[in-house]
Length: 242
Length: 230
Image (tube, rainbow over all chains, first blue to last red):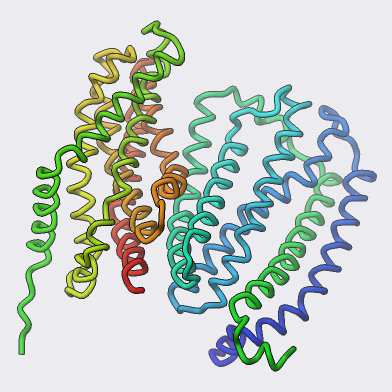
C-alpha cells in the first residue's frame, strides 16, 4: 500500500498517469456536459415563475458547487503536502487554486446575470452570493501569497498553512453571512430559486454537476502536468523521456 | 545530565515584558495606528452627512471597519524585526513551545494597539452619533473582536514576514478571514441600538475568539518555522 503510494507521488509516475487519465476525463466530461446542456436547455420544462430564465441554473449551480469542492481539494492537498512533505501534493494545490477561483468567478458572474431579470438588479447582498464573493477573496489571497515568494518550497508551505486556516474559516464565514442576511432581508427574495425543484429539472442538473466534476479532473490533470514540468525542468527523467 | 530549561510560563512572561518595554521606548509606533483610527472615522461624516441621527445608523459599522484597518496596519511589522535580527530563530531552537512565545508577542501587541482602540471607541463612536447605551456593547464586541483579529493577523504576519512589501498582502490575506468578526460585531452594536438583546452575536464572537486562541498558536508557529528555516 505505502510503496504504491510513494510510487504514485513520484513526479515521473504521476506525470505519466495523469497524461493517461486526462483524455478520459476530457472526453467523458464533454459528453456529459453536452447531454446535460441539451436536456437542460431544450428538454426540461420552463419554470412556471421564471420562464426560461431559470436555465442559467445549469451553469450557475454546478460552478458554485465546484468552487467549494475545489477549495476543499486544495486544502486537503495542502494539508497532505504539509504533513507528509509530499511535493506533488503541493503542486496539486497550486494547480487547483486558479481553477477553483475561475469556478467561483463563473458562479458570481452567472449569479449576477441571473439576478438581473429575477431581482431587477445585477447584485443583491444575498447570503450565497456574498459568501461566494468572500470565497473568491480567499482564493485570490492564496494565489497572491503563493506568487510573492521566490523560493517555491517556501511558497508551497506558507500557502498550505493559509489554505488550512482558510478551510477552517469557510464554514464560519458561510454561517455568519447566512445569519447576517436573514436579519437584513425578507426571505422571499432568496426563496425564488428554492421552491421544490421538479425532477425533470433536477436530472440534467446532476448530469451537469458530474460533467463539471470530470472537467475539473481534466483541468487539474493538465495543470498538474504543467506544474510538474515546471518544477522538474532540470530533472534527469525528463531528459530521458524527451 | 539534566539541562536546565526556563519554565514555559516564565519564558512567556519574559517575551511579553520585553515587547512592552520595547514599545515604551518607541512610543510613536504605538500611537500611529490610533491616530489613523481617528482619522479614518473622521472621513465618514465628511464623505456622507454631518447629521448625527443619520450617522448613528452606520456608526457601529464604521467604528468596526476603522478598528479592523487600524489594527491590521500595526500588525505588519509584528515579527519582522525579530526575524531579521535572529531572535525568532533562537526561539525556534530554544526548545520552548514556539506557539506560546508567539502568542505572548501577539498579546503584548494587542495590549498596545487593540486595547487602546477599544478604550477610544466610545469617544470615536460619540462623534458618529452612537448613544451612550451602546457603549458597553461596542467596547465588549471590540474587545473580543480585536483579540481574534490580533491572532488572525499574527498568522498573516508570520506568513508574510519574509515577503517584500508584505503590508498589502497581509491585508489581502487577513481581511476576508475577519469578515465574520465584522458581521457579528457591527450587528451586536446595531441590535443593542434597536433594543434587541445583543447576546447572540457577542457569544458567537466569544466562540470565534476561543477557537482562534486554541488553534492560532499552532498556525503561527508553523508559519514562523517556514519563514525562519530557510
